[in-house]
Image 1: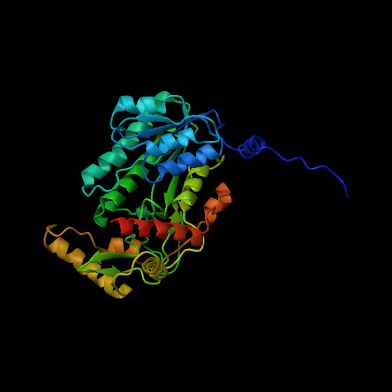
Image 2: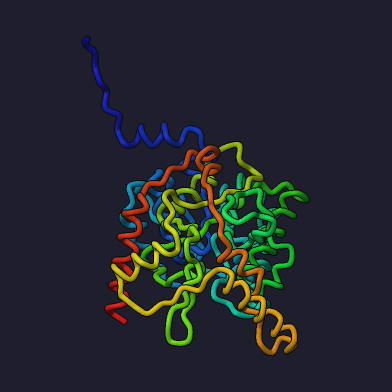
Length: 369
């Protein structure tokens, strides 16, 4: 059998890959929170797909060095526009959304302990951005990056799958976590603007995003206290997603047609249990003392903490309660079938490789501490 084989150039391959996207390489794309943990990975994923007009909104005090490096070293051959501004300022919002066709909204109030601060920096900022979008017009999609923290995991028998149809926390303030409260209210704002004003949107809910730059052991595994680590997760699956894999899913959520109004969970394949993760961490990063707290014991401790907090009229904040237990330590499984079927997403960095990279970063940070 004879024939000819024509090798396609990278430009042709990109054009074919982008053929079914809702925006083209010369449409302007806004990434808020671009200087954060996830932001540079989303920017890099867009650049690799050939998008040439990326506007990165960062806070006035943020270090935008990574974004500048990406702008100098990308195959798209275009600099990354770095716009310094504050989403609490209407003029900054208007400038950010000017001539924008697609928005990846990563900016959020992370780390705030106080509910008002979290609300202002996640909910008010999102509302301001959506108001600016309504005035500007022309938007093809608003991708709101949320979190697994919004789920209540109530009514889900132990060991069953948590998916996009699972209920969201109906009373997020009772969780005692400002981040959860703000994320639930942020999603409500996005859904309201979609229903009332027709803002085309997709909500993406990553699980536990990990990788270099986010080295802390997540609370789903356990918590440090009393001079040792309390291992609370046990045999529970940890809903991990490596930062590069998560960025790919977020990018596809903005590009694929026919997914407006969808909610999409992001977790990787081959998820480890909490016990497996902790064992690997101790082996590859550093050993330390830990004690396993069985699920029934952790549930009773959360119940007692919750009741004492109520009895003390909040003098002891309800940081540990049954609502948090259901989300963090109740036996639950996770699925990524929806992002695979709707977005055509696949895990680019295998879990074994991702964990190795993560633990190496953790080890370097521990040595330099």
